[in-house]
Image (cartoon, rainbow, N blue to C red; front, top):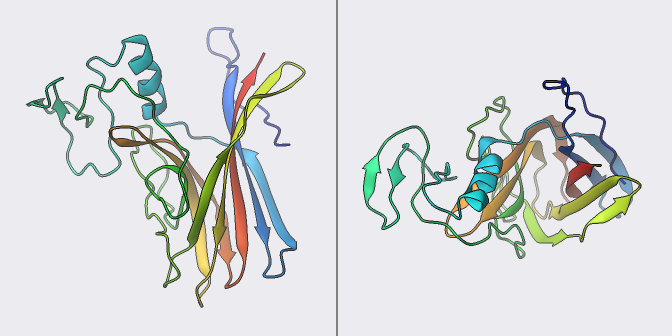
Length: 215
């Protein structure tokens, strides 16, 4: 079980009661545990709050920074371009943003990368995503598993996890992880820079994100 210690300063006397943590387990080519990394996830990005805003406003006039965005723009409910004001969006979005990716899908769920640029609040993608495959600097993405809520005492957690396999012939460095969610568009809600993990040929790793509610 991943545990999380809050390091945030109290805001006006109220401690935050929602957070996240990650756990990465690296397996050698024989399936034995080689390394385990656990830490608080430091980096919800603004798209996480935009999902909350979207729910509150029933999807109207909420802009998201899309993962493929090269420019910042806003479209109205019919899709017409109306302004450029700092974030990117293109739809009136009522549906869910799903993370339940199947094997090989890098557009949603947990994704990994090799970038090390520090996280900013309006990040919309990993610095350098590692693509699915068995070629140079690629990893094979397994499907995403999402657990039902688990309660221990006053702490409630939901875990999203995914396996990654190095089926190529070269070692692949991993230095960032994130969570992509996809509805009509794809957005990123979490991104963390980690100490570099070098995944050698034949090795695999399990990456898990926990969303944690402290009662």
